[in-house]
Structure formats: C-alpha cells, structure tokens
Image 1 (spheres, rainbow, N blue to C red):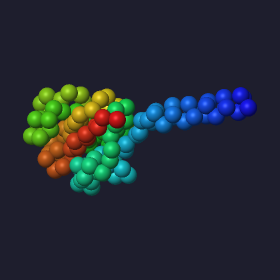
Image 2 (tube, rainbow, N blue to C red):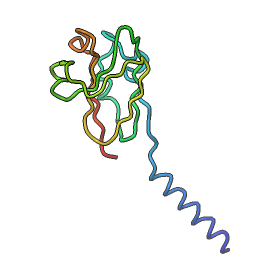
Image 3 (cartoon, rainbow, N blue to C red):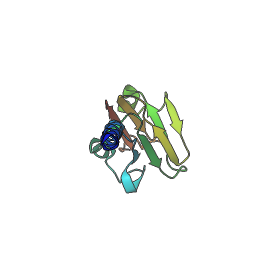
Image 4 (cartoon, rainbow, N blue to C red):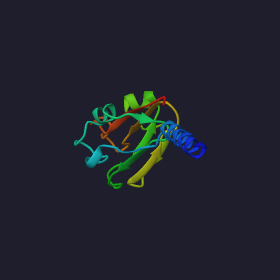
Amino acid sequence: MALAKSAVICLMMMMVIHCGVSMAANHMVGDSAGWTIGHTNYQKWADSKNFHDGDTLVFKYNSQNHNVMRMSHQDYSSCNTSFPIAVYTSGSDRITLHGPGHYYFICGFPGHCEFGQKVNVRVTVS
C-alpha cells in the first residue's frame, strides 16, 4: 500500500513538473516561402503565431539577394538600414528570442523593406 501511494505521488509530481515546463518552438519565418520579397505578408504571418521567450526564428533565404537586419522600432517603421542592432547574412539564420517585447526585422537590400520584406514579432510573457 505504501509503495502504491508513493508511486501515485511520484507520478503526480512528474505531471506537475512536465506541465510547468514549456518547450521552445522554432518558427520558420514565412513558412514554406521563407524570407523573400513579394510572396508573403510577413506581418500577417507573425500575427498568426504565438511567440514566447526562448523561441527561435529561422530565416531561410538566398544570401545573394537578401539579408536579415534586426532594427529599432523607429528604423523598422521608416525602413532605415543605417543603424541595425544586428545583421545576419548566412541564408539560414537562427535567432533566439530572449524576453518579452517586440523584435523588428527587415531585409536591408534596397527597396525590399519598402516592398514588405519586414516583420514585427511580439514575444508574450509565458
């Protein structure tokens, strides 16, 4: 009887621990279209997702034609590429989101941001 009671308590503790742990997710930006120009409404894509602390954005693109720049809100809004927070150029970038708030990304190639190759990702508090 004591063994069965211990097993039930152990099982319940494992369930509580498992439910309290969230698994970080990988999000392919633009889904199957990837990070490109003219094929995806990236804001609509981002608005359809739930982003959490620890999730990873995966940007897949042709590095000869695109890049990824993390920007301030102001520079994102105006498509100003002069002051990026970070620049990624591998064509297969993995960017982990740390903490709640907005993360702003654009393509820095001339005209691409203005044509819609930009995304505002909002990370919510878990």
